Image (tube, rainbow, N blue to C red; front, side, top):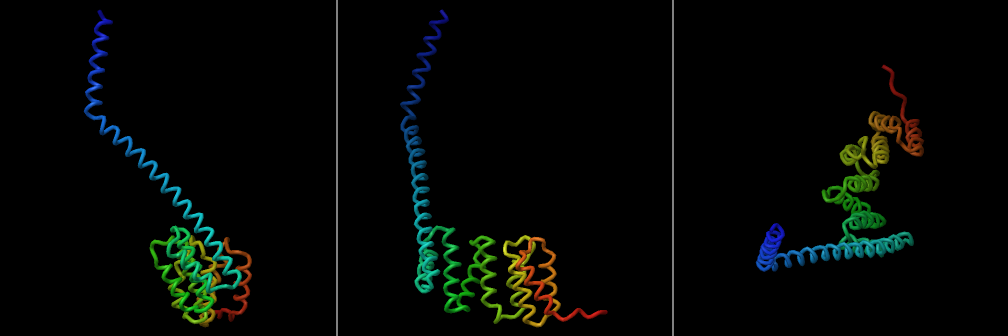
Length: 217
């Protein structure tokens, strides 16, 4: 008797499943096709992005070769083209390199370009700091210490990627402005940072020797 009931239950379940399939099969098939299409589309997108990155890398290398060959006008054009259409990572690098090429003919224009990168919130913090450093290097001989300080003080912080270069530029700017107090302040920061590169430490010590002795109270 139990076997009979089992067979009846089996037939009932089979009929129920058939009714469900007849009712919802179109949705199940559509959902499966959508999933397949989505996965395929994502894989295709990943492949295209990888190809773009490879192409951008090759174009970046060619532009760098032009720069190394002192073909700055051609290098500038090549980097500018990459900055306009390359994937995000290469785009930022290309903007930095475009400004560097412009510096070979117009330092003020290049400094403005670096300032624009530094102010762009879509750019990473390290790249923003690098742009600030590059602009400050170009303006060191022509801008005031207060301007240099407003540009670089944040980049000279304890955790900043390019803090060592920022501090050296600030010390040099203060020295050029005959501000011995500010110069000593930045030289002390350089000396007290255990991560200061040896070459920079040596330059800081040489600059320290040029300062007048501290007046005794």
